[in-house]
Image 1 (tube, helix red, strand yellow):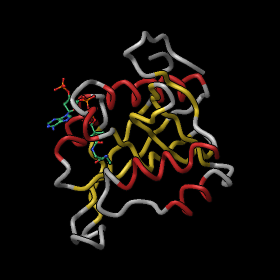
Image 2 (spheres, rainbow, N blue to C red; image 1 turned 90 degrees about the horizontal axis):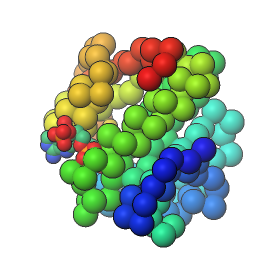
Image 3 (tube, rainbow, N blue to C red; image 1 turned 45 degrees about the vertical axis):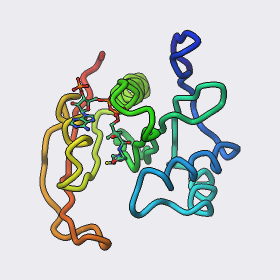
Length: 157
Ligand SMILES: CC(C)(COP(=O)(O)OP(=O)(O)OC[C@H]1O[C@@H](n2cnc3c(N)ncnc32)[C@H](O)[C@@H]1OP(=O)(O)O)[C@@H](O)C(=O)NCCC(=O)NCCS
């Protein structure tokens, strides 16, 4: 699966085990509780796990990972290199994955996000995600609540 791109637009492709170290490096510079390198490698061994990236000359600019079980997807992580933010990469990779999920017959998408993560909340809400609930004191490093968001994929998007 790929999307049209020019010299400056990162290329969209599915990630595999060979991308685990790049995924780890992006995790480490984006999250307060990043996945370890071992967790990134182990994830690709799980049948339900899938990840897609935006890459420029094989540098991972953005990535999104999720579990796909039946007609549901649970987004695990979405990250954009700090130096590449506010350029539309987050919205682009999320929309490309929602389009791919629609083609795979997936109907529901779920995710959790920290209450204080205003950029991510704004991105999800602007892409049509709806707030479904709250998990109290979910994140152990800050005791922050998790907001649960859901999205019902229309037949064609
Ligand atoms: C959240 C994140 C993925 C957004 O990626 P991005 O490439 O910067 O986002 P985009 O440029 O595609 O912006 C899309 C929309 O998101 C919202 N947004 C993104 N960054 C924002 C910010 N700093 N403040 C407010 N809104 C923001 C806006 O609604 C924006 O639309 P607009 O540009 O028309 O205003 C990025 O900030 C990131 O990697 N954060 C760290 C990791 C993380 O928290 N991931 C989410 C885990 S649930």
